Image (cartoon, rainbow, N blue to C red; front, side, top):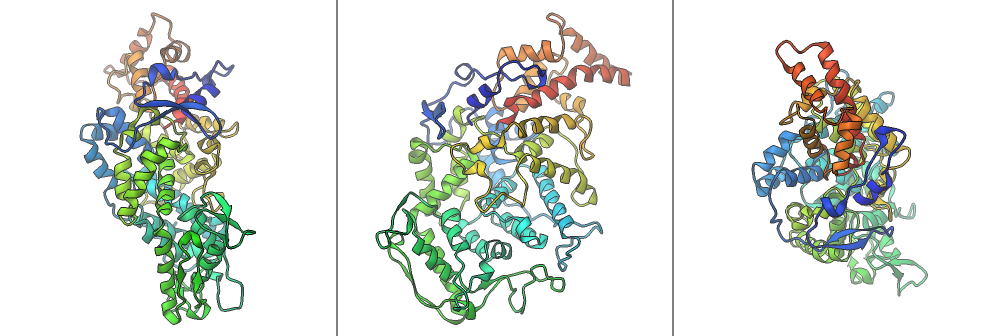
Length: 584
């Protein structure tokens, strides 16, 4: 949902003041460069832009830095914004794209990790919650880096569900794989995912045999093409088999041929005789190729791949057919375009109109293809572009549950425990549970296509907001005022970081800049002062006097603190429930 529709949907006065949301007056507050009218897939009218990948030439300031951080990290704080705004766009992107050291693994109740041991059937469900909490902790403590945002991107792109795999060691290994390749080579990552034990289990690759015992399992071969690389394209007719379902990018015959190429791979570690999957006796995790299970005959692909033939290989050389398959798929320009569309929807906006396709997706795909599928040059170009920083692409994304939950903790400066101690379990597990209740359960996406908000037309991001989830978002932010999972929001400390917190108008101006990607209207600001804070017109000094009294020598008393919070808490709770806060 674009910001104007979202805000308008939730506008007007409610009998519940905390749910009062006013629409943004887009024409006044958002003059756009190169804007034009267009429609979303669902038919809604909104302004889009004709800008492309030309370098952003506007002012590099706090607004631009905040937009970059909103889209590349999970929330940002004022110090992050100030640090980037005081440097340059190039320096900021270098920091975001810099390689990071891998984090230590999560620890169990004993203070050491369980991940190097054998499978523990009675404890693995609990261990999975530790693993999820640990990942949330990495997001909360991410610093200025694109890594964790990209780890989640790859988890959504190559989904695996713990509820199906049910071995936390496998999921940790896959999560580490995404972190290793987060900003690396997509083709190499695709090969690593193909051989990843968790994926071999999730999409039945371990059971894909070509020895005549069973028909080859087509599950992974289908998703490899439909979801992970080239995409379906437009449905069409296969001239060789008119009765088969076919697409402009691949056919059913290609699925069958790819499945035969992929026979023989299993999650039995090299040199072992049995898989370590849920094995209470073996701690070694890995994959290997079993020549006796491989179909060594030639595999012929359709016209969509130029009628390519992958010659069958025998013995250990059969494993090399995987490289032939990936070379064939990644040699198709449509693979680069499909992957760039996925990145665009992750970082910019869900609607890819004709201008975006021509002036953004196509040249990005050329960059990806020319760089042999290294993702860094693509992200560096996109995130420095006039298109990315165009006013119409600011505040047009509805925050995902992880963005909302983790971003709130980071933005409000809430102190969290170190991941090196078992104290992290409670707060970070509580945060991941809140995100799961908002329809984003880490390590348990709803299916092999990932979360529908990133692919389901015509709604896309709108799917994050419903009559069930919107109130839950408000409940989450409200709970931070009284304590959530041992975490407490120090409101006075947060507001004290503002330049002039004693002036209610200046305070609201700064809070709006800090919390929202788009400005409030004057009517909204007045409503916050007079209706939410409860100040009388001409009586704004009551807040100033109360704030100054608390900060005067000897004024730090419970009575004075309560007087400050009596006005401050309703203001902050209200602002955190505004529709503007749901946008990024």
